Length: 134
Image 1 (cartoon, rainbow, N blue to C red):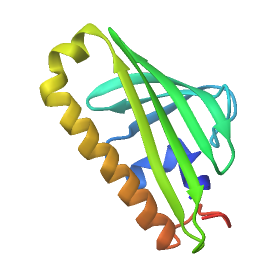
Image 2 (image 1 turned 180 degrees about the horizontal axis):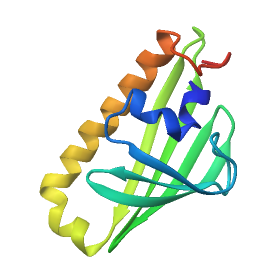
Image 3 (image 1 turned 45 degrees about the horizontal axis):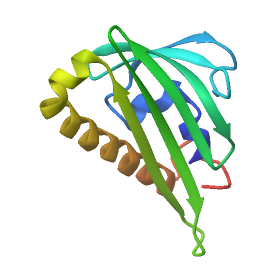
């Protein structure tokens, strides 16, 4: 699971809302602390920098788009049964986002849940790029 999460070039394989990923700086294609890239998500090109990186535990980035910025984190916690709990955190700021919140916030929640569900399914199915820790 971790290998899929730290490779943005493959996100579109299981998450349709990550398109046209482009490397900007730092380690690539496996991102790590300080890596930056851009992608099209929710119809906008977002420039992103990895700001937290704890292998197999936590990955987070800050993204910027004209008039807005956000922070997204993935938290992976091993379970006693050998599985992994996945949790995401998201914050967004910006005038445009405030205006669009009634429509945008539920869409973000749905799409991020889809991302989590599809990542879990890809890991369970053994799709390429999955490492030993799930």
